[in-house]
Length: 270
Image (cartoon, helix red, strand yellow):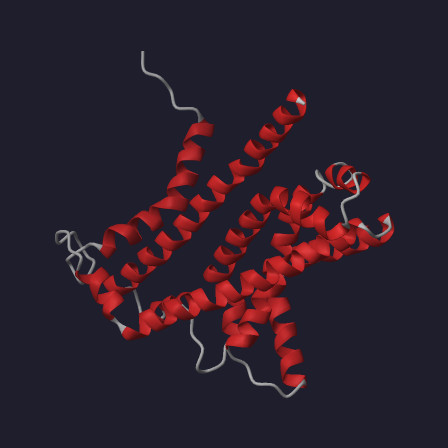
C-alpha cells in the first residue's frame, strides 16, 4: 500500500525548496566552470580565487568589517547603558523607553535611513563611512537592547541587591557581579549586531558617500548587469561569513543557561 503524502508535508517541502533552492544554485554556480552558467561544466575554484584577487572586493570586504565593528561596539555600549538606566527608572518611564525601542524595529529601515539622511543634509554634512556607521547603530542598538534587556531582567533585584547588602559599592557590584553574568548576552548582542550591520544594504545605500562601498552594495551593483560566476563567488564568501557569525551566536546562546545552572548548583551546595 502506497503511503500518501499529506498536503501539509507537500506545502512544507515546496516552501523549503522556494527558500533554499536559490541559495543552493548560487553555491553550485560559484564552483561551476561553465562561465555562461547554462549547464554544469565541471568543478573549479577559478571564480573564488579570482574574486579575492580583485582589489575592489578586498577593499569592500574590509570596509564592511570596519563599519560592522564600529557599529557593534557603539551599539552594544549604548544598549547596555540604556538597559541599566531603564532598570532604575520608574515603571512608566521605563515602559516609554521600551516602546521607543520596539518602534525602531517596527519602522521600516528605509524610513529611518531617509530620516537620518535628511538630518545630515540639513546640518550641511557630507555622507561617508561615518554616516553609514550612524545609521547602522540606530537599528543594531534596537536588537542589542532586546537581547541585553531580557538577560538583565533576570539578574536585577537579586544578585546586585545581595552584593549591595554585603557592602559592595555600585562599581564593584557591576564589575564583579553583574558584568560576568551579563557577558554571554553581551557576546550574543555583539554578534547579532555585527551580522546585521555586515549584511545591511538599505541604510548603506542611503547613507554611503561616493567613496564608500560595502560588499553587499557591490554585489547589488554587479547583479544589475546580470549574474556571473564572479557574483556567485562573492555571494558564497559573503554567506560563509554570515553563517560563521550565526553559528557563533548559536554557541553563545548556550552560555547563559550553562552559567545559570552552575550558579544555581553553587547556591544549593552552599
